[in-house]
Amino acid sequence: MGIRVSPAGNSEAFFSASASDARSRGGLEDTFQLGNLQASGQLRAGATGLFSANLTAQWVRQSHGDGNTPENRRQLLGSLAYENYRVLGVPRLRFDASLNFTDAQLASRLEGDVDAPRQTVNRYFQQRVLYTIGRLELRVGMRIAKVEGRGETQWFLRVQRQFGDL
Image 1 (tube, one colour):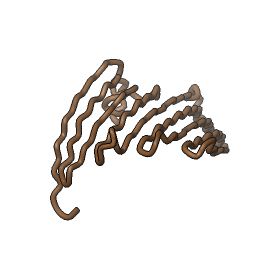
Image 2: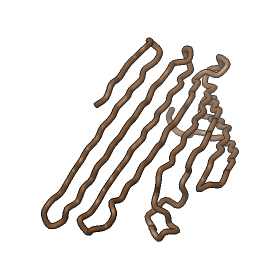
Image 3: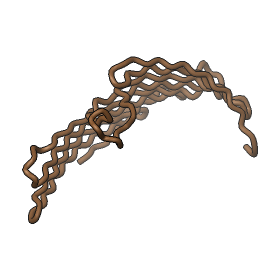
């Protein structure tokens, strides 16, 4: 079930909720239950700016007929972002910033799961300034992250030249 609303001409929001329950009987008795809540929205900031947000919460319960305890997982993730396509009125000068977080309970390599992600990024804030002049793109930015409980800060500068047909 979902609902979309547009409270003003420059904004939009979406809310949804879903649940499922699947059961298997016979040789093995398995159950799978899922609950999902989501909210997202966008808000225009003038002619060149855009704010957006997303929040998702999910619960999963799964059990197998082998007599083991049911497996319960939950995940909460979200993001906030701002984009401006003409900073200070300068054509082709763009800015974007985003804040992302998750508390996903993921399998760990330390527990023996070789397919688990190498690192779990719990949250990060990133911002970039991009400027394009013809085929030349200049990108400057920074990222502050919390990766598996430890802080990380990155700064970057990229100058890129495109070749070929535009």
